[in-house]
Structure formats: structure tokens, C-alpha cells
Amino acid sequence: MQKSFCFFISLLFVLSCAGHQQKFSLSGEERIIAVQYDYLFAATKEYVLERGYEIVRADKKSGEIETDYKPGAGWSYKTFKNAEKRARIRAKVTKVDSNHTKLALEIISQVRELAGERVNYIIEKYMNPSYEIPNSDWQPITGDNRGARLMYNGFFKGIIAKAKKLKM
Image (tube, rainbow, N blue to C red):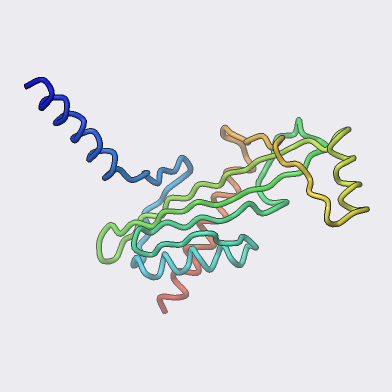
């Protein structure tokens, strides 16, 4: 009896793990927009491409769009006076009803200081283009700041305008 019970519990555990899929969760901003799903999904893809981001994944069925990091994009704090920054975008488009769609955006901004050893890496890269610069010292920029709000507002405004243009 005890063996059957253990087997049953083990089987339930294995089946529950096999069916589990990683959830796509965002911690950025979201808005419900009076535009149909297809237009908003297409507009989001087009807008991030126009901004110079490279899309690494776009799944129309799930509404998920992810980009690679774009050097020079994002925001940083004033404390990083001599720094470089980069950002990537994650978006989730979700149908609310036939004429409304939710757009969730997460802009992941990172920064690293250009001091001492970092400057040496960049000089080496300039002298030897095949040299790979280590990138393990990137720090995420978190919290609410003016740069982040401006970037989010700009993305939403641009995507909404593009979606309405596609609709016409």
C-alpha cells in the first residue's frame, strides 16, 4: 500500500512539472488601448524595430515580444557620470475585447561605469576589433525616475500612433 501511494505521489509530481510552462511576467507599465489586437501587435513590433532594437522573439499567438539589448538605450542615474547604458524591451499584447487591447511594456535598463579597467577594455576593442569586452559588470537601473517615465510614455505614445495609422 505504501509503495502504491509513493508511486502515485511521484507520478503526480512528475506530471505537474511536465505540464508547467514558464509565465511571461512583466514589471513595467501597462495600458488598455482602443485598438484591435492585430493592429497593436504589429504596431509594437514595428515601433521597437524603428527604434533600433533587434527582436529576438515575437509570438503573435501569446502576444509576447522580446528584444535584445540595444547599446546606448535606456536611462541611468546622475551618479553614473562616466557610464554606458543599454536597454531591452519585453512586451505582452493581450486582447481585452473586439476593440480594446492591453499592452504591457517592460523596459530593462542597465548601466556600467566606464572607469579604470572598463576604459582599458574599450581601448583594447578599438585596437583589436576581434577582442570581446567582458560584460558581467552591468547593473540594473530600478526604481521610479524621470528618465524611465519619459521612455515609457514615449514608447506608448509611438506605439499607439502607429497602431491607429495601421488601422486606417
